[in-house]
Structure formats: structure tokens, C-alpha cells
Image 1 (cartoon, chains in turn orange, red):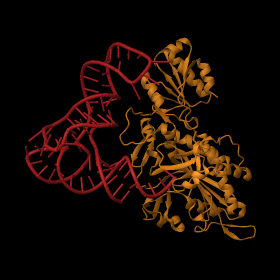
Image 2: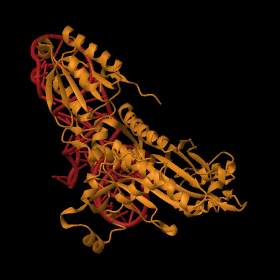
Image 3: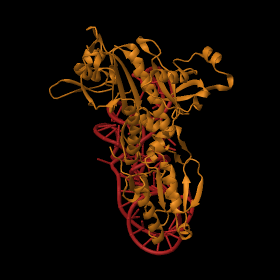
Image 4: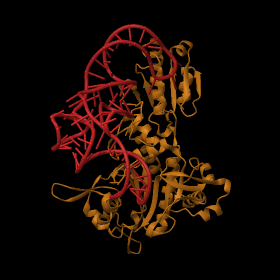
Length: 447
RNA sequence: CGGGGCGUAGCGCAGUCUGGUAGCGCAUCUGCUUUGGGAGCAGAGGGUCGUUGGUUCGAAUCCAGCCGCCCCGACCA
């Protein structure tokens, strides 16, 4: 799981492109290709090169932290599943062509999992038999495959994609709501930590009904669906809301507050209600990208899969379940959609492949080399992820590449500055540059 | 799955209409010069023109099939 804390660009594999490959239409796809993060293998299927893979793992790490925090525990389930499981739930025949069906050497029907409700239900049911075995929450982060008719937008709508899926198990629907709320709260924090304003919007609950399904949407021009909301939602500081997930009342207060504002995707949008509830100057209609979806589905799978618990009274009841998805690979693209400028990507710090890019403007110059090596070592010692551009390239190339890959901070070390005892510290986001001593730069970044 | 488009060097493209055996920019390699925002000069390497078949003396170019990819729509994390 550990990411390398520091790399030298002269040893790294980061094939940046000056020109945009013609197949890429939207900005995140273009920038991911240009920054050497991914390579398309076939329609909707990508290899993740070192830079892209780092981002993916940073996103995973934030997700893991927030799942751990609410007592949700990680498992790993296979990508290939047996058709048997899916026949039990009845979905094998329902799923249609989106399911990639495979036959093994013994002619058994297998499939590349598009999701894992059946499997997790089966796993849980085998070992959990009593009301004492709940509540429980499990999650996994795994590659899934849905044979989309028309993959597009790079990793945002691939056929193969990396998902975090969590599942909750409870005795009663009321307990199920508590688990649902824990996930809801974790989602608020998780997106905020990634530097995103993800807005929870009521989603279709299907046959279950109720109010227990939300999509988490981030706003971006290239979003795939139209959304409407109250702009006050963008002002809520959700990361700093210190919510105790063991306090159901507090959780439902916070969620009640967040969901009290109007917010809807096009399937759920009610123009009359929107007009009535949202003051004119707060009406916000924009394009949105779905980066998460949480759903309480009760006994939809536990019933057919025969996942039952015994109550205190000795009665046998199907377990109440919910599932909670985050599109990890999609987020890599979605974050870029939300965070870029004309020069390239502008990574939020929590998911940036490296925090700092150290640029040596004159490789081979003894003073520049020494100053860079010293900073490189000290940044590592301070626990700062750093990429050192020690390539023998021209300044313009280095600046352009560094802006393109979007590391939050750049330290520029050149002969003039070194002679004067200063380096330049540049914020990728604001573009603000300042000259200061190497020690001062270090102190600023080590925080 | 309906509609449209594209496949020529690592990338971006021209050449296809009007058939005569492939070119430009960037990248790569060598040398010299240059060196704080994608350098200059000189030289070099690199393409069975997606694929199969057909027409023709001759096909990147015309015809047919197949494969791949992209865009719009319907559908989805």
C-alpha cells in the first residue's frame, strides 16, 4: 500500500504529451493522457501509468480512512464470480448485455463482476446468524466491469472501473438507517478531504421507497447530467463538522440540515418545488458528475439469498442491507474536471500524486545540483512527497510539464537564485511565486 | 442499439475527390551553439498507408467485406 515518498524524474516513467491525442474530447481525458497518467488499451479500458496510479491510490487512501473511521472494514472479493450466485438472486437473467459473461474450461458459467451484492450477502450469511452479529459494515475496493454500449469521457465512463463498495447489515430498517447515516456522514467528509464540493441529491429509491438513496454530485461543465440546487449548499463546511458517528441523533441532525436544501438531478427535479423553495438569487442550475451513490435496499438480496438472522425472540428474519459506492477511478477524472486551468491539472493536496515538484533549472551546475539534492533529501526526511525534476531539459519544458501534472507546490532552483541564497516557491493553484531561502521553503512545505 | 465520423512514422496532421509506389510539424538519435516559460543550425533513423479480398499494367487513393476507435442520442458509478 505504501507509495514511494520521492522520485527522480530522470528515473520515472511519465510520458507527457505536448499535443493532445485526437481521441480525447473532454478536458480530464485530455489532461490525463497528456500528463502520462493513463493509456487506453481498448474502448473504456485503461492502463494506469505511475502518475495516474499514484492518484488512484491517494484517492483510495482517503476513502479507506473515512471507512475505517466509521467502523467499516475492508475485504477483497474476486473480480470473477460464478453465475450460480447471480441465478440465486435472479439477476443473472435480468442483467443483460452489460454483464461480461465468461465460460471456464469446464464449461461453467462465470462472469466478470459488475457489482458484488450477491457475493457479500452470501459471505455475510454464511457466518452471521444472530442479532448479535449486527450491525456490521464491510467494504472493498475492486475493479468491476460493465460492458457499456458506449464508453466515453476517458476514465469517467469506462467499462472497467475501480469502485469502493460498502455494504451494511442490520436487524431492522431503523438500525439500517443508522448505518446509512454513518456512510452518509463519511461521504461528506471524504469528498471534502479531496477538495471537492460533493452535493448529496435525493435519488430514485426504486421499489423500496423512502428517502434512503442519495447520489453525490460534483459540479463541472462537462458533467453528464443537469442538476439543480440551492447555492448555499456550496458554502457548507462539511469537513470541519466534527460528527460523532456513534451518536445517531447528531448524525441525523447534520444530515437533516444538509438535505433540507433543494438539490436534485434531472430525474428527480421538480421545477415548481424548486421555484417555491429556493430564493431566486440562490438558484443554481449546472452540469454534475455523479461520484458516489448510497442506497438502502432492505431485504432485496437477503431474501432471495436466504441471509437471515435470529432475533432475541428466536424469530428468523432477513437481514437489512444497504450499499454505498464511490467511483474511485471516475473520481480521478472528475477531480480534474473540477480542478484544472489552461496550463493543466491543479491537484487538491490530498490526492496530488506528489505534494511538491522540485525543479533544477541547471542540471550539471554544481551549486544548483547541491542545493536540489539537499532540498530533496530534507523534504523526504520531513515526510513530504516530492518529485525532483533532475532531467537535462530546458527550463521551459520543465515548467510546462510541472504545470501540466499539477503538483500543488513547485520549488524552482536556478543559478541566479542559488547565488543569492534563494529558491522560488510557486503555488500551482494561485500562481503566486515568492523568493525565499531554502530553509524557509522547507519550513513552509513540511507542515 | 440508432445516427454521424475517422483509421497514413511515437503524437498531431496533409495527400484520397482527379490511381503512377508517401510527405509536413513535433518527438527521437548525432554534432555544434544555446540555457529562468515547450531553443537554433546541420545531419540521421523511423511507415507492409487498420485488415482481407476485388478492379487495374499500376491502389494510401476506386469497389466490397471485416476489425478498431471517436462523436451525438438512448442507458449507466
